[in-house]
Image 1 (cartoon, rainbow, N blue to C red):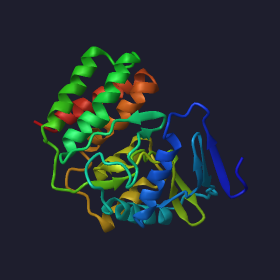
Image 2 (image 1 turned 135 degrees about the vertical axis):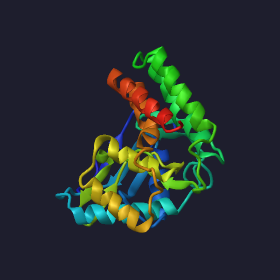
Image 3 (image 1 turned 180 degrees about the vertical axis):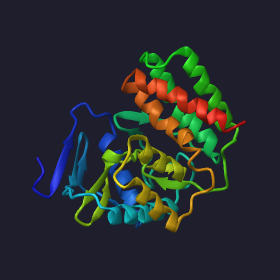
Image 4 (image 1 turned 90 degrees about the vertical axis):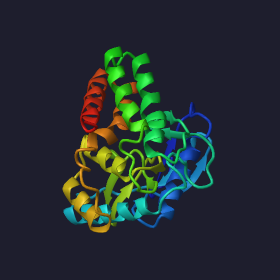
Length: 257
């Protein structure tokens, strides 16, 4: 295994490009000069060695600084919605699941067709979402694809799987791990933090807004931006996420009225 200062993740059954994609995402996020990411020590087929992050008690100050830094990361941008890390044209993953490479000038088209519907279909196959719920999700995705939620914000450089477990409070501040990095909407990262909670989340948001004020209505749009992580979870983690996915789809439809 890795030394005292590193940690090794290995998977004998890793699909081609699995850890290489993670390494590319880490480097791309780090290049933004914003939020810290656990550095890649070494990467090869089936394994990655990463800088070890020592855990410390989360503080409001560290959370606020992380919010500021995350806004800087987002502002570094991406070539298109759905684009992968610079220099990486291999597959993209979220957790163990592959994310389709769908690129678009329209955030809504990319998000619905590349980040929600493929995983919703997998959730149906897994028996975690009913046909009626799927129809609700599809209806919401039609509104999203039609550009109902598109704004003039350029693609942000997002972490892509920013739940609380991937936000580590270390001695030097917050360090991110396990990205599913791609060009997306900044609000998606923040909605994912809200999904399972994060220490001092209000301070993270405050810090973020001090650098990049969020557009009005961002809180109402949280369910929209949670469609992706909920669909991913519904595909692999049980029926309860299918129920939540349908609820978020209804909330999204409620915003189109």
